[in-house]
Image (cartoon, rainbow over all chains, first blue to last red; front, top):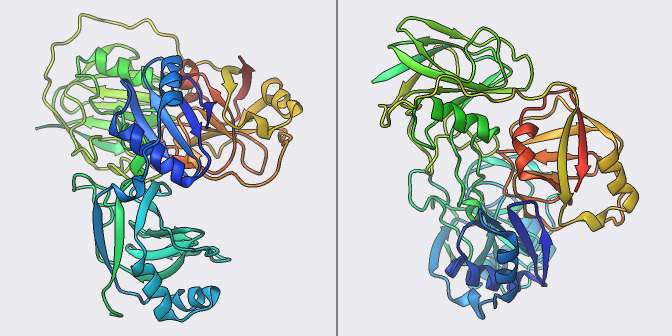
Length: 201
Length: 279
């Protein structure tokens, strides 16, 4: 673990891998140090913003022990998916299997929200499965709200219409982000997700 | 209900408060007023509660009509034609017309009672990046004003300096990815005179200048970033993140602007020379 400078109000904790990030974030978010405003996990790092003293925060962050097994402790939600995405065939070809196999693997895995970014409520979900899906060579200018997608080791659901380069495998009617709801984001870091096959539309 | 009516919004006028801190883990940017001190001062001058929403005006041009008697205070970039840094009464039917600012970029108009649009995720701020919050002001829009909850302060005029014209110096400290750049790259950052690009906005201030030399190639995994982060995209020229910056970014952050200089950073205008002073 390395603690890197990030201005007068934040420190950036760099960790070895995504599992350690999830464990570190889980431990920190469960009992946030005084004066901490925001804790932002990402692929290899956790950014911690404070109104307090950075030296004190640095010691606290250094002494923190990541939670073990944090992938299995978050609450579990189910997301119904209609697997008719435009890139489902391409993903099947990339994985050397059938479309039904892709759906089978996507629904069999238990996913964990590792972190959010890109847009409000856009969660980067990872699983123990072996996913390594390249982004589309040319991103779409318009991906519809609720599109279920894959890129790299991640799965995600577009919370609203936006441009995007992920491979689309399906869609859901679940409201991933709703600013009238509290909490607004369905996917928050640490939450576990199961995708459920809701047919082909 | 009190209100004012927008006759002309000027280049850009948005509703801003202290923003949405605390939700970055959900991908929600902080947003809020860019020049925090000017915004806070405007609220204090009209006796508003801390965190009341005001109007952030970019490069003047805002014209509003008082639908009832209103008390306003105008701070930040000094626009011509209006009283500055002092509470002023606007009678029903009167117009408030902000000319171009003499220096600086962003002017704050606080109205006693505060702008009373519905909050989104705890804030009335317009976030131009994520699209959260109210849309920028448009002509003929009615802006609701809340009820005053606190007494007027006994202050006639706040003696504050206007944003600087000419060269602006911003102090910087090394950021988390300083080591992605050579020592020559760092020296270039803190020794050259940059020019503020016209591509700057509430997301970030872009600086034009000589590209910085990198010590390593490759891609950075996206990581969390705070206001004041100086990101170096492949072009090699800096982007300083302001209020509407994304929660995470994928380009290395070579340095951060000192927190005390972030308000000055929010006031630099396109073409203005900027130096970054290494601490």
